Length: 514
Ligand code: KIV
Ligand code: ZN
Image (cartoon, rainbow, N blue to C red):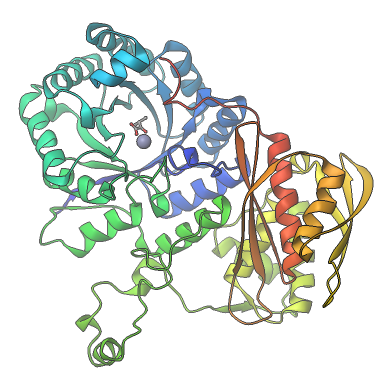
């Protein structure tokens, strides 16, 4: 029997620390539900002390998720740990993940603490965390650049204090596979009470080695890997969950471990996270990229037709790839619509939201006769915005674009319930629409990114637009989908404005003090 490798997903915490990847409460709940469906062991739902909004999202996830453990990050301070403990309180299974930096550079320059003070603080924080749950994880931040003797000392102390999982992060992605596995081997050998805990790793991808480092640590005895969907995360990101899971599953001859993951949920999870964060998946990305199972060369195609395993080491359907499936059409009723949403794991907050989504589905089905799962996912993403968060709403738009003429847009928005109109010209129809919206909103936000993707194939496909805006150090992504890409763009811009309007300042756990 293969030993269990615990999958700890941090898409909602480290993933969300990627610029512009911040998610609303409802979006986080959708991602958490998908992670639970995929049978992730631990969901790091956020950093409770970051802001009241982050606290609230973790609390809501703790109320919703029943199968996976729900975890909150906390710096090694009593206040942070109290917030984390309160946020995860409703969860069936709960974990507090507390951390403090252990590398000389972090202790001296960031924390301004001596090594003795760091050990004392770490031990105290385990005691505080144990008041809320028996499942306590401790991370030695920047372990990848820490001294081995010091790591042994602090890990031994926190095990004695009651930590149950010990995490070894390569915070800045500096390690190489052989070096990192040696660190794990040494820790398991030299920490006297090492066998009482689960050893975990958390690798960043600055040198493109996050997955390789994590897997080499598993070979050395690590039994938890921290990872994210699509490898999202700070800077170059974290180890990609899909790559970790499929490597250990595809190579049982090398790995004596397996995970509980339902791999058929990997592609839906990847799509969901990409759609919500606006981070596209590169076509040649392993497992979840559009070309990951495409055979272009004639020789490869011929080989696969004769015997699939000539060029394929995994089956596309095993990781959740499906043919675009026609699911609904203009004659489909409310029940068929509702039951397809539930098969996709989408639960709308209220009957009103369901009715609104169904009305939008009917409108879409009039314009586009074949409705695919991807269309439904895009369609409901609008209904998961809470009405309170909808300060700006697009009521009407008219955009003209003619050869030889300057494109012009006229929009009517509802702003906090009051209708306002504006017109503007621009270098193209989208530019004109954005300028007209800005005349009304006067947000002064800077446009960082504008991207359009076709959700399915064909010229009647819906365009899915992502708009990234920044203002006063806050960066948000807005999404919009429609068969008319100018309208999709206007919706995406307004969605981003709503997020800027409702988002509060938040603390980055790794930039603050203890
Ligand atoms: O990269 C890191 O060190 C972290 C810790 C908070 C675990 O994200
Ligand atoms: Zn990290």
